[in-house]
Length: 386
Ligand SMILES: [Zn+2]
Image 1 (cartoon, rainbow, N blue to C red):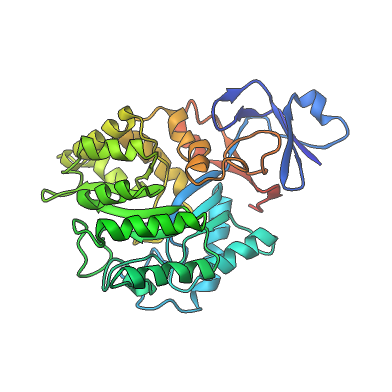
Image 2 (image 1 turned 180 degrees about the vertical axis):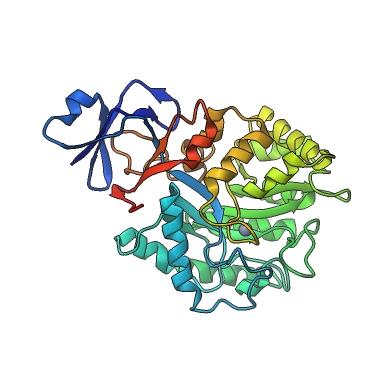
């Protein structure tokens, strides 16, 4: 049993009176008063630090190397030790859960299980395996190409057989794949409807990659669980084709938006023209005002986007979406846990939850950049060595 004392605590929803957290094994067993909880327990005085739930990145690709300009044609075993380095760096930076939305050889699932057993230090992982895509479509190199519904069902079943945690569908093209266009849809409505129903029959949520507006519309109608990117790409570029009636479908179907804002989006804030920033900001504002929930995500692994930089990305996301600090923090903790269906085990500092705890220097409610100043991290009760 270990008690962290003299803390500021932001519990995933709000700042609370309590100033101590007691951990036993992988769980938080009490949250309360330092003097009371210290009795009969090993203690660590954490004065000056704020405890908050560990961060959740809703969209990463563990097997992709951010230093590669182009994705590899085939997933080879040499990536496995690199993936182990990445998950350790993520844990050190305060990420205690990550959702992997695509790889080619299910290596991330093996890593998920090794982390769960305690053999490897890293965040809890939820993994989709191979995304379902059209022939030569977005990320086809991962092996999930399907020319028709029967083939798509086969790809889905293959992921089920590998014990994935969710299904990923590429509803539109993307920028990373040559010959694939972000504006283009990849599957007819009926195919998406059938795949989503089939995934749900296996109790698997669905994440849909969507840049163009028509793809967003189809994914929303099909009732996917999260819309990734949600870029509203139209003929005039990024965020040029936001549509209120489609956003309403997203809202009505209880779908979460995962906008994949990485720290490099700071360039949007620094740009002198401000055109794209204005459009993106307006689309986010309209969705948020309507009541659509957004979760933090980075698409880590794509060129220039490192796996351990969610905290920095969050600061940028908060500025672009014009969120207050509490809402920014919720997007990567309590709200993210709800979006991923794991709010019963993580995303809050509360007795009974798994001990996913980030201790930062300072108070992020006053200064959001405090989340980039990691002091200590506990992943399911285990201290991540600094
Ligand atoms: Zn991605």
